[in-house]
Length: 108
Image 1 (spheres, helix red, strand yellow):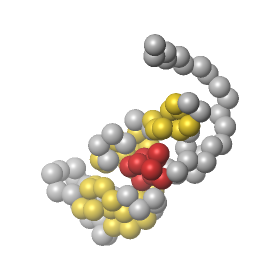
Image 2 (tube, helix red, strand yellow):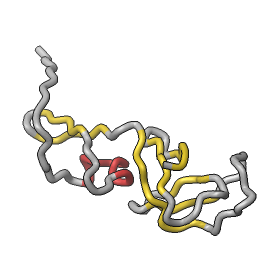
Image 3 (cartoon, helix red, strand yellow):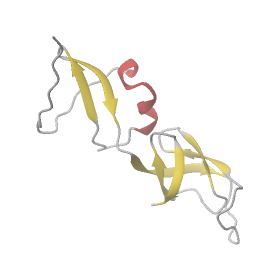
Image 4 (cartoon, helix red, strand yellow):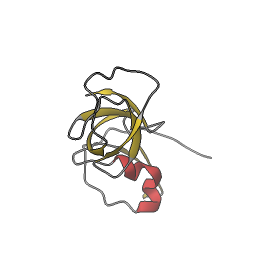
């Protein structure tokens, strides 16, 4: 008979394999707290926060006169993840990213 329970435990550091992390590895930044799902004492999956603040490390120069529109450009983030951002976003800026869609939400 399957049984499920949830318990609050203090945060701990756990080493996880890439195959357990899956696409979540693109969102792992220092000090990010994630929930790890265990089965029979082994990590089987992770749950990320809905949004994460990340730093843009590479993108084309921004346009000062640009406003939010349907025009976007690629931006490489600190983990190597590439998302589409509005033209006014520049290198070094922090942005909010939706982890479920891998999409730009706003400036942080």
